[in-house]
Image (tube, rainbow, N blue to C red; front, side, top):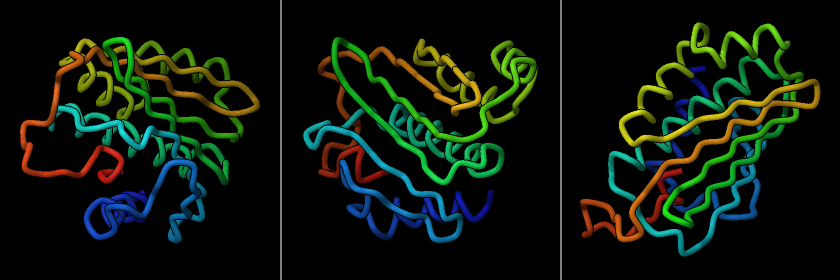
Amino acid sequence: MTDLKNALVTVQLREPNSLRCGERATFFTTGLQITLDMAEDFGRLPNDMELVVFRLIQECLTNIHRHSGSKTASIRINRDAGQVTVEVRDQGSGMSPERLALVQSGTSGVGIRGIRERLRQFKGEMKIQSDSSGTRISVAIPVRENAIAQDESSPESLQAAI
């Protein structure tokens, strides 16, 4: 888990343009191949919302690495119709129906509970689907069309943070 978080921090701080849309990145410490699908002109979000999106993706990738057995992950981030949507998928073993019910009810999974709490401050919603072909986490966060980052002096997009 620490290796994956360190890899994400490395991408965020030292190589801001290393993960581009449609390209694959391999986090060498985990071997997990990650594909990002996000518009080049996505723009910025308020800083606290960007952090929530980053932490969501970080938690999903950590769970994929620790639990799914998948060697790949795909991340899709869209902004349209007054909301930001994030989808993280793997092709791992999935969760049993019993485990999925526990995670969906909020009685299991400390990391997922933390994400739900962070999303709540933005009135965001999370859906988790899982079966033997993998797991998909889908998040929708309402955002005003004119919502921009609080620090406009920084030209980097959310993509650079990922």
